[in-house]
Length: 470
Ligand code: ADP
Image 1 (spheres, protein in one colour):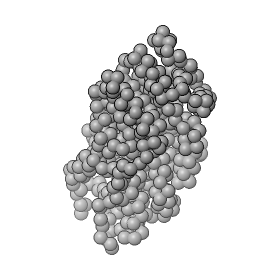
Image 2 (cartoon, rainbow, N blue to C red):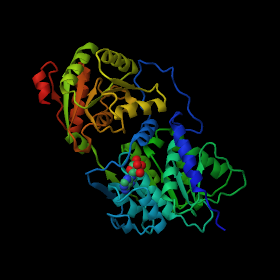
Image 3 (cartoon, protein in one colour):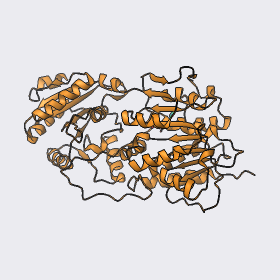
Image 4 (tube, rainbow, N blue to C red):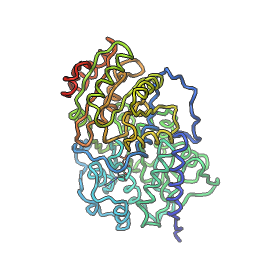
């Protein structure tokens, strides 16, 4: 007899945990991290991909749709490629389709149009999908995971790996919602706090977990057999490989899967390291990508301003903001020290300013962002913690108080794109201002200009007529 799973419990569990997320540090291992409050204020703020990614998931509401076309690559040109414009065309289990509508999804998102038929195809097809956060990847692979379950087989068949505890719980929540009308599908979280007695065998169809726990369960406790997994999902692979332990654990899990197991690989970015990892894990894949670079920069007017000192930069900033000052602004600083210096000065001058930096808890950051979204503060000053992923629609001007550089002091073009990428979204025009205070900074500015092949124009911050023109 099939054991009925209590979905209501999963949903409430997931909701409880996702509320807790807001009060704990995002944890990429089995224990919650401790806050690093003793960090040097003068040091460049560290960018933690897992944090940025989760924050963006929590704060974002709804789908980000892209006008861009999907770019598809196939190693084997004979493998079929389909695309659908409706969920009905997918021949989903009717109860799963009911779940899709229950979620309020009317039509597949851009990435889902191609990803879903590929993921559901027979024979199973391996997929690498890369698109920014918020484009519908999770909903796509969760639907595929649920569709692939054979409820008559009482053992884990689908294995999903997340780089963080919180993301695992969130994905479980999406799965529980989509499967609301398929109570016969059973699922098990393999995350900290979940225990299984040795010498038992899991009977659930789907495991949603983190690499460490999954390895323990597979090899130490032997509660399920990796060889019987038909579908392997690696989520946020770019975040996953940022941690060497995770990368090694994923490799070990991967090595023990059956060669016929379907591999699904998802990532928000696609630099060489991610691609190398993807190609190692996913044999003969269809790769689909949603490009965004061009779209963003097309709508952004980029400028640079020459300054000498911090005070100069401040004057330029307030001049420009004072003149352009409709809408909201985000200002990026390299260090917490600069961020707090700037916020103090701007507050004294009567601006409503919020500061977001790495010394805040996740809950505090969410509060700051929520207030900013609601327009309670017009200016958000931030360090690198917010360098990617979070979209605030009303932002018209982004200022790089310091130009983004990598650890070697070279131009960090990807971070630059993520900084200014938050203006000009949804087809609106945006302005990006770079404050250049040295010859080295000027070189970085030029390097960024060359990289994207888009002009960054000189702006005289004392010429209010010129500023008005922008
Ligand atoms: P990603 O995994 O790429 O970050 P998600 O799958 O989490 O994206 O989707 C982002 C948001 O859009 C979520 O709130 C999700 O519920 C919603 N969403 C996903 N697919 C659709 C769709 N086809 N129609 C409407 N909303 C969708």
